[in-house]
Picture 1 (cartoon, helix red, strand yellow):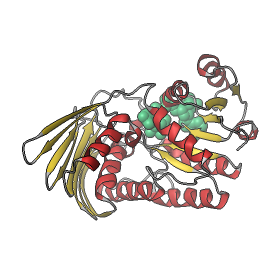
Picture 2 (tube, rainbow, N blue to C red):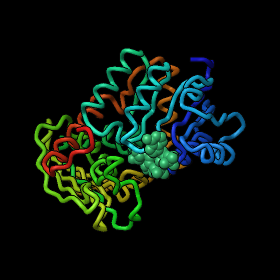
Picture 3 (cartoon, protein in one colour):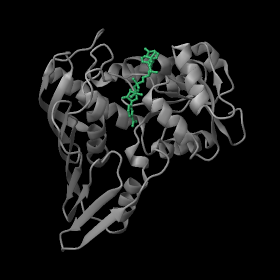
Picture 4 (cartoon, helix red, strand yellow):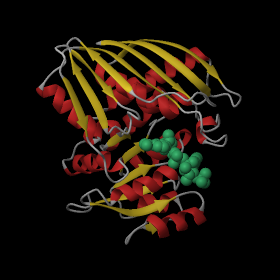
Length: 328
Ligand SMILES: NC(=O)c1ccc[n+]([C@@H]2O[C@H](COP(=O)([O-])OP(=O)(O)OC[C@H]3O[C@@H](n4cnc5c(N)ncnc54)[C@H](OP(=O)(O)O)[C@@H]3O)[C@@H](O)[C@H]2O)c1
């Protein structure tokens, strides 16, 4: 790393999530935005002015960004280009935090993970929920006062008010409910139940060719997951985790969690509250910076295997729905 303690970030992309990430950096100790590139020079300059802070260099090309004085790259483009930019950043010797879904399919992910291993650089999919204070508080609560063996995860979210030009509807950009919002539910199932063994899917494709609703019943190493995701219904975004001696509800929107209720089989009820600050992306970013400082190549909280299991589930679900993206 080029700096003793400060991790300098470069961002690829200048859209909504890139803005949120840049704002979140103010809440991450020992991190700063060093450079930014997006394919529209105007957008790059405007972003640098508004969110760049003191030292951010707006770059005219991806190569200029990768050659600049940065340690890590945050990939904030749409998912059809995540793999391409991850490879470029890893080749340039940068650590990579990549927005979800890390890639659009398992084959792409395997290539990226191989590249990360070969380059000996840290790679993590930016899956924010496990880093939120509430999620950590819940894990701590269940470690101190267990609910027994978890055997069921039920979670879902369907959004009915996304504008028609939202990238989630874009076939070209590998959108769809599964990869846009369902990826969070897939994470939850894998995080609590382990590797998927069987994925059964019902759903539908919308007029743009992407999945607008999917309902999954999945068998995992340690239990069953019932998941749904959609872009054409107004559906609740809470999560339910059932175990032999109790159950947990993470209240909506569970992927930006602030409140959970734990109910024990003996009648006790524990309410957990934990607000988050800084837009929420700061927690995963702080974790990533710590891993760089510690010389780690993989996160123990969001390991490569979890990303692999998630995208394998998405691949299986898309296959059942007959949804293939360009080049697949
Ligand atoms: N973690 C979270 O909470 C969260 C929330 C929302 C989204 N996301 C994820 O973040 C990613 C970006 O979403 P968003 O909402 O920020 O989208 P957005 O507002 O549409 O921004 C997308 C950005 O990516 C750029 N881009 C798209 N395709 C590109 C390509 N092939 N090469 C170079 N630049 C490209 C766009 O540039 P142009 O302006 O030139 O098109 C724009 O700067 C998605 O993968 C999404 O799943 C994560």
